[in-house]
Length: 169
Image: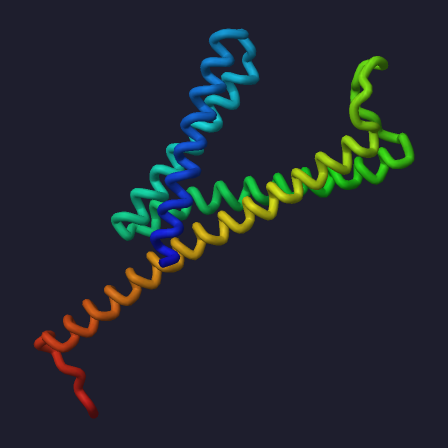
């Protein structure tokens, strides 16, 4: 069950990454914004790692799955640090020490409301990312356990069929 859930989650992530890469590429071509080209490249490279994860899950090759898990661990660590810094900025915004840029005619959110609302959304996205990464890690563990079971069965059959028997002295 976990194995199939990991493949489904990885496939959904791959579809999102490819569509984001195409969107950023189109945005770069239309506006000439180099930052969009950078994001298009990042999403494209990450989609290659996700593709390797899916191939590794289908073929039960755990070494194809490890680079994506490493990349996801780096992403989650960086994103967690960003969320912590955001909440520190939110605390500072309560005392008007940090402000976001908006026009004087803007009748939208206040400074503290903007930081709190964005912090809540970032925290929810962080928890969802952690949960999805945990599902994908469980898929990796499932593949590793299947490979270990197959290795143990193969090893015991080879020992049973071996001409060399252990000698007891």
